[in-house]
Each structure stands twice: as C-alpha cells, then as structure tokens.
View 1 (tube, helix red, strand yellow):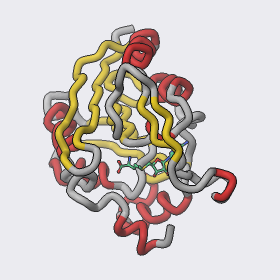
View 2 (tube, protein in one colour):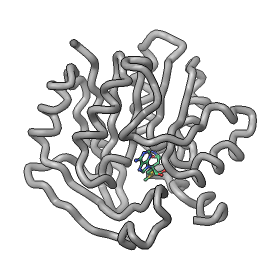
View 3 (cartoon, rainbow, N blue to C red):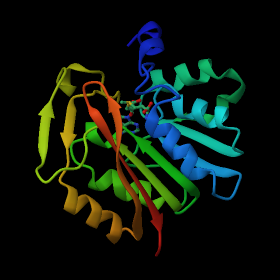
Length: 207
Ligand SMILES: C[S@@+](CC[C@H](N)C(=O)[O-])C[C@H]1O[C@@H](n2cnc3c(N)ncnc32)[C@H](O)[C@@H]1O
C-alpha cells in the first residue's frame, strides 16, 4: 500500500474515528478511572488514537502494528506523538503481564488464521478491560474465507488481509472465561454497509 492508499484506508464512516463501535467504547470508558492506560493492538492508521484524542478523556496510548507502513504512516499523521506508535506482533507483545488497564483490538482477529494464540497474548498484557471488535460477528458455525492474494505473494513479515473469518461463538467466549475474564458487553453494533454489524465484546478481568 502506498501512503496515498493508506490515507484512504479506514476513512469511511464505518471505520474512521467516529465509527459507531468506537463511539460506544468511548462512552463505556467514560466511567473508568483516568488516565486510561490504553494499548491498541493492530492500530492501523491510528484512528482509535484520534477517537481518544477527540473524546477529551485523559489517556496514555500506545499503538502496536505489525506492518512498518502502518506504524510510519501513524507517526507521520501524528508527528507530536511519535513514540506512541510502535511495530510489534499480536502473538508476541513486548510488555510485562497485566501492564495495560485497557487492551483494545479492532478488526484484527478476523484476519488471522485462528484467534486463540492472539487472544491469549492480549489477555496476558491486560489487567482490567479487554475490548475486542470483530468485523464478522461470532456465530454458531466457523467460516474461513480466503480473500485477496495468498501470503506467499506478500513481503515476509508484512500483514496480508488474506483471511476473513467467522469464529464459533461458544469456544471464543469460553476462552475469554478461561483467561480470567467475564463478558460485560456482548453486542452487535449496527454499522450498515456490507458488513451490517460489528461484534463488540468488552470483557473485564475477574481472576
Ligand atoms: C483491518 S486493519 C484494522 C486497523 C485498526 N484496528 C482499525 O480498526 O482502524 C488490521 C490491522 O492489523 C494489523 N495486523 C495484522 N496482523 C497483525 C499482527 N500479527 N500483529 C499486529 N498487528 C497486526 C495490520 O497491519 C492492520 O493495520
């Protein structure tokens, strides 16, 4: 993706800083102790950073993304906050256990082949509130769709939106419970467009 492509990436009303699921998250977080310690995993072009900035909430933010282009784009987009965007992998986050009060991950798990390992890592670094937004709502049946170019045609180490998965609901929720979390929000957020609904899950650490 060029910088021009990135400028257009996730700028529509279903995904930009005012997307309905992001507004829901901000309203939910309004009651939480500040400053919010907010880790955004798979931060993309930095839209959630902008949502937080516009919210007037006090926060400390770090965005982690696997793709150097995303990280560099976000650094350029928010030049005053350079240190807040870093390159990293959802499978191996370079933070101690339970370092972050809020761990947020939007539209990333859907694109991985399986969610278990990534969810475990997100939970490991989270001390309180784990927020997952899925592009495809959890369902009874698993569906793995192959889209775009196969990963062998992309640069090694860079992200390819090769998969678009629906995960089965029961094991996903059970996994969150096993990881020590209770589900507080389990909601489909109406967004219209092709996907119609995003699935927002907010889980709090109980163990
Ligand atoms: C569809 S975009 C969503 C971006 C952002 N969360 C948002 O909603 O605006 C998915 C992002 O996940 C990142 N990503 C994919 N695999 C990743 C991994 N293994 N570790 C960290 N980030 C990853 C991609 O580079 C991309 O920026």
